[in-house]
Length: 89
Image 1 (cartoon, one colour):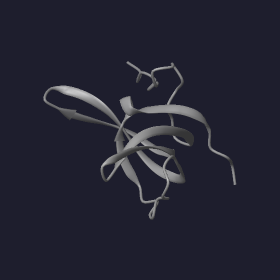
Image 2 (cartoon, rainbow, N blue to C red; image 1 turned 60 degrees about the vertical axis):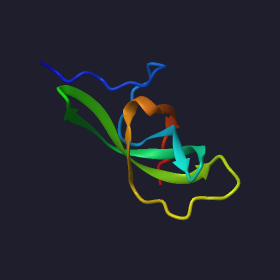
Image 3 (tube, helix red, strand yellow; image 1 turned 180 degrees about the vertical axis):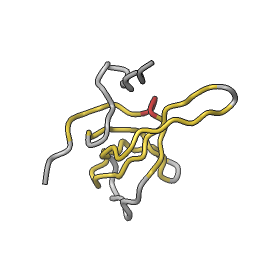
Image 4 (cartoon, rainbow, N blue to C red; image 1 turned 120 degrees about the vertical axis):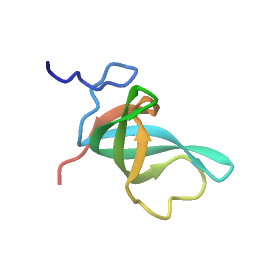
């Protein structure tokens, strides 16, 4: 059996090197963050397989104050939507 494609709610494929947007908590607020997908993984908990993503924020996000660090984050794939391909250096 082959692995199924991981997609967001619009049907766009989530794969490494695409840019996604997701909601992140910062203090008492929620901001929209843009990030590049580094790796797609899955986690099994309570008998269910949940897709997760390792992402690196690009530094672009909503809100007044900017992000101080761009460390790698782990997010649930159901919280992300693909917004484009990452630019090639």
